[in-house]
Image 1 (cartoon, rainbow, N blue to C red):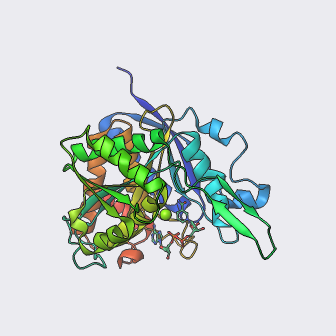
Image 2: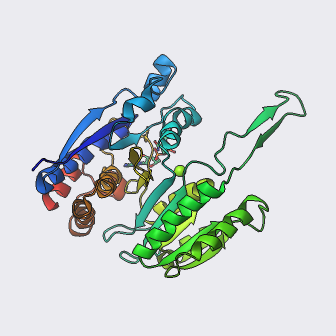
Image 3: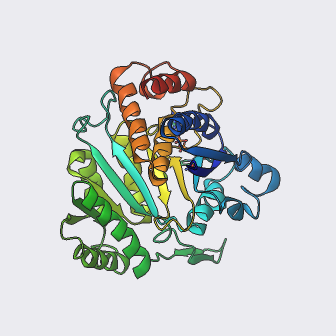
Length: 354
Ligand code: NAI
Ligand code: MG
């Protein structure tokens, strides 16, 4: 029969973004051969902060339309010294997330055998959780403004926007995911201090919970939850959170797991009306860029999430198994994990085990 073809947009971005995407592609190509599907890549090598410095925009005006017919987007990282971080975020990542209704930001966190967590109680094999972050509304809104700039009464206002539809759909995704995993869900809140939006969030959590009787759920205030994620990370399975809370919690949890270089993120449009986007959690790491020593595992794990989304769960599992193997069974690793291997050597070793 006809070979399934997936159209993949590659956006390497800046710094080590361009160093970690080729390893991810190598791994993807091994899986395509093994499982008999085809990946056709279109590379947008120029969409970056460097382009912004040259041309005043991270991507062309019709950038979103160029991506529209793709099945998925694999992104490296953006960020360049001298370009404010809000430019790269609002000039590329946020337009893609919002333009393609990628309202779920999914961040799996595992402590792998062979990784030293800075947290004593984060033992390998025990910590395996997923942060589900609301990705298009909440605290990261454009509602607000700045008044009286430069005067003593200068002020700034930024409004949080929670919509019933927007909160409900991400909760449904999180409850569904919890029901397919161990059946536990924790909602991050702060309804003691934030008295309008967070009680509404809590109310919607309770409403949706009624439809998922098989899921045991609770809620924790964000400050206490941050502490518990460090003290008892193995207790958590699915953590659902608003845009800002989820952003902070997922970086915290990735640090608990031992390295920011390993963590992946998926920006999902669950209805598949639009392409979803997959990326490592880390940034462009200007301090090590150009030296060929970036850890490629975050990008490789992101590629595994992409294959899972595209309907190849067995291939995705092969990749995460190989990540676990290379860490548990070999000493080969990049300097961020205490080794001396280059990105290429680490990738080669992983592919041997794949
Ligand atoms: P970063 O993640 O780029 O780097 C933080 C530290 O971790 C650095 O010491 C870096 O060398 C190390 N590191 C990160 N990824 C690594 C990898 N794969 N292998 C080995 N070491 C790694 O975060 P930072 O320094 O705060 O930001 C640098 C730039 O990246 C900024 O412009 C920031 O805006 C941008 N950024 C972009 C993101 C994205 O594209 N989604 C996410 C986070 C930051
Ligand atoms: Mg973050």
